[in-house]
Image: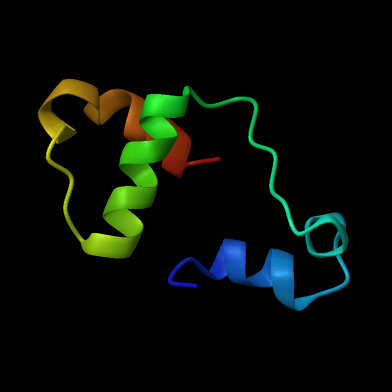
Length: 60
C-alpha cells in the first residue's frame, strides 16, 4: 500500500486485518475516491473542486 496508514491496518493485528475491510464513515465517498485516486496515481483531477474537503480528509 502506498499509504502507511492503510498498510499498518493490514500488517498488524487490527480489526481491519481480521475483517479484511476498512470502514470509513466520516468522509464523503466522492472525496474518499479522489483521495485514493491521488494516493495510487499521483493525480487529482478534481482538486480545484474539492481541495478543502480533501485537505480535511487527509488531516484525519
